[in-house]
Image (cartoon, rainbow, N blue to C red; front, side):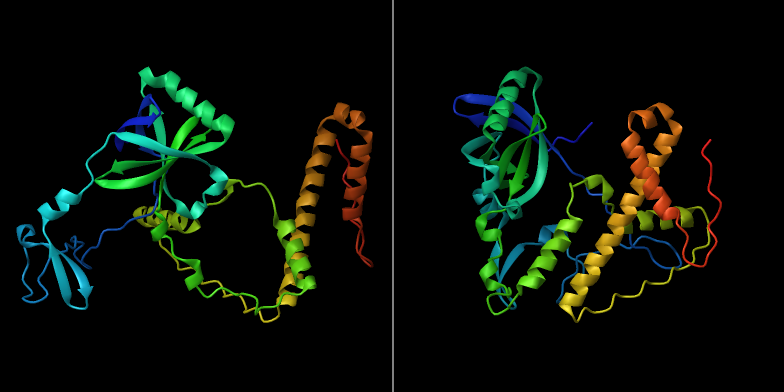
Length: 315
């Protein structure tokens, strides 16, 4: 069962929808414990006074805010408790906005919104209304003693809450060194860069991307746990530094072209296999089969001075 991190309701107007939040993502990072070499004993961290070097018990530790190097303002626990936002079990919707108006940089962590069994109808009503209007709800909620700004959006027939950063948490881009008008980009460079982007463009398929480092670490752990001898792999050579932008663009376009040709060749081979395996389909699509045959013939054409291998006959 998914872990519930908050239980309450979503309120808009006079309508209240009882819901609960559960994390929509889970971190799969590989974590390690620190051990003493030789004995394998766990390493424990202790809170030690910088002045005396002695361990300090939790009841003797207070919170201090550093206002300048070495100077602190001490804030007592009861002072913080008096300012802490009161636990609320309601997400009050303050605005409905267009999703396109929210820069993704504001989003932090996603949570699925699950409805109470008795609230199925108002929940579905809110989902369908927001989906139809393509709107996102903005509200506030207290999660784990902290008030969070949240966006509620429809997602595949359900609701998803995204905790958000406040505006003053976003680093101002005008403080960064970003190339401006002083950098000249020629029309030819722009055309080649555009062509390169278009050659690599495609639909987003999240399942094709993997955390290869994590997979390799887990494989290493499995091998060592099984007692296999581990041989260190040589490090790959670092790519050469690009000195000529045009040369790099031209090389990238050539490489993208070769990849496209390879993909097209694979598709032609798959099509030939389908035609050979299904005579009825080859009759129904004579032009496509002929085209594939010509393509295969082109690929089988021997280089000058070399004897062509005997052609394979399809069964």
